[in-house]
Each structure stands twice: as structure tokens, then as C-alpha cells.
Image: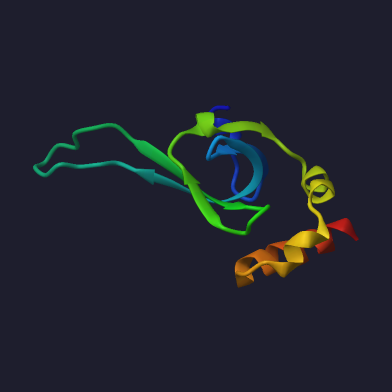
Length: 104
């Protein structure tokens, strides 16, 4: 995918640790590195802050090529199961509750 196709709040299939998982994009950060002086040297860098819906853990991507395809919200919910309600982090529990609200 290209960075123009990725939106905050969207659900995407992303490659994390050699596995394809569904993530929700929480933030898109654009950095313009400057190495001092009056000129900005380097190019613009974009990073994506995401939440892995299977584990509830934060993950990040430095490239839009990590994203494979967009997954509509209802499709992401259908792939989730209730086994994640035993999640160890409060963020994962919030994600599961939000997904249950989408089901209704």
C-alpha cells in the first residue's frame, strides 16, 4: 500500500514478526530530520503507530509497505474471538469492548 491510502482509525492487515495480523492505525507521524544549520538535510520520514488487535499490544511501522490491505471494521470484528477478553493489558480489553460495540 502507499502512505496516501493509510488513514488514522482504519483497520489494516499488516506484517508483524513474519505474520499477517489485523491492526488499527492510531497515529501517523511525519518527521523531517534536520541535522543542524539553516538547511534541512534529509527526507521526510513517516511512521505509523498501531495496535495489534490479536494481542492488544502497540506496534509501529516505518513503511507503508508493511500494510497489505484495508480490512473493513466489520470484517475485523468477525475475525476477533472472545478469547482475547483474557488479555493482560487494559488497552486490549478496551479494544475488545470497542469491537463488541461495533458488532451490535
